[in-house]
Length: 155
Image (spheres, rainbow, N blue to C red):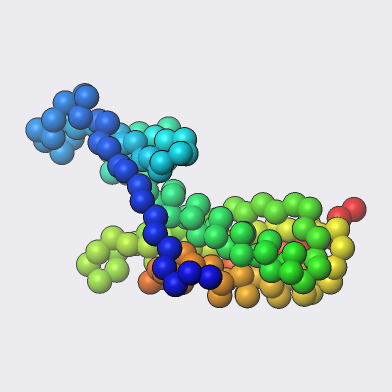
């Protein structure tokens, strides 16, 4: 595996079309994020910060990134261990709070529900810890990323 991987994105403030930043209450927080060759993401600030609730916000995307990274690491580990996963769903939640006089994430809880067709259920459950250790995104943040997984056999 290569020692470095590079990622590039473009973020454009599309809210400028509704007017300048003349005061904190009036300007739009809308933005578009693009990665070459992929569909754009229409975003905004969280509604608590005067954003559009119908758009993704950076906080949503961070929680999604942590959840998706854990899932992809987990599926790889299960495939390597001969555990057949037939369904995976996560209801991840993140908590932001004032810490050290800054608003920041203080915790993310992943709650994956996994269904396996074959393989050892206890091993499948234990692989969540390995997935956590393997997740690049979880290794990159300075707050706890916890998981409370449930694994069930199909049928």
